[in-house]
Image (cartoon, rainbow over the protein chains, first blue to last red):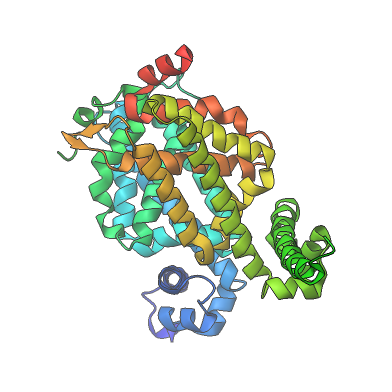
Length: 208
Length: 214
């Protein structure tokens, strides 16, 4: 069939299918959890043949891990992009990164749930992916934050962990779409240790 | 003593049963800490608890069932310890109560690293089954922390998320340490956690001032 569509290169079709399968597992695990999600459900949702799934992935877990990996990379790129916005001050970097994170959660609730909630409990490997992603985001936060030399060494871990927990609760409640409303409070939370309480919102700037 | 042989035996059976159940719960908690969930079998739990496999099934339907009971026990013991620390500091200011509560929590974790691990790591890994209990426990800590705390304002409004974010930050830090194999001496993080908590409400400078004033 693909030979009748020479304008769509085989590679494009293949990567589009991979994408559909990864989207499907994100949606299905968000709806029913990892355990209850079956290969049959995934291929039906993605509208691909069962064989296509096994041609591309070793099985359900491999697909799940690939989907998490892809979404975390996209999220990371979006957050890095957000950190570059604004006037380049560390406040603007942090608020910009946070804003990008909250928008990702609101716009891609299934992917967010897969990476931030389901990954922790689905399989030991997915839990390791979650831990590795947390470490990356802690590093990214540390690079962007104001000088914290006088603060506890673990401050970034605590702050990123606090933001993650708030978002996980929001996602579990089914309120992912409202995540951007949290920007003022979370900006204040992550910047207060560095800048003092009450000084933060002026710099937070993007929504008053 | 000779007067009530029957009654005494009746009591004893009940005592034995309760004692077995408690031993199975701590057997699972310790096995989990040492070999992980997958490797923790009913036989291993039984061996550690010195309870036969058939007696195991008198108390629990399955390993999962025993896990849920162990998880609940761990959460309850943590809550009791933190509440006791807070009660001991009753009448004191918020800034005096925070170190008491954090200290009580970390002392318990040092005494029983396996308990810290099941509560902070294994519970979340186990997924939907016990998540509600984890959340409920954290919410009770959120409420405790909020009592009498300084209220940081956002644009004139209270930052409601602060209490929750601080509790989430502390538990996340502790669980990351346990995962990194550094769960034996969580009390080393005492000053860091107290200073983090103060800095979220008061800013880093003020937090440092309070912590270094002791």
